Image (cartoon, rainbow, N blue to C red):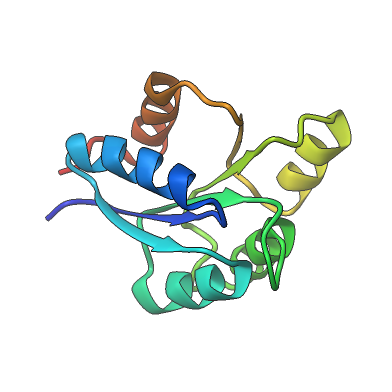
Length: 124
């Protein structure tokens, strides 16, 4: 069974681009376009990994990450913060909220794929 990755980003092109690349590598993709929908989908589907934008409508990525990491049912799901916010304090806050990694936009697909494989292994 393919490993499932939830992409939470309010930019449809990012979801499409990242999702296409991950599907081509054998992963199953789930997606949400705002923080609340991402949080709800993460609880319902328990994906193997979450790629989470920070600047999201309804609830920001920091809050989504913090809520999931504080709940023992979801705390083991690796979360990659995915953002254009490059300030040192942004990275520190992401780590404080429990993010497993932090990736800057624009991103290199090979680096993202390598990070995913490091966190959860190959797709199947």
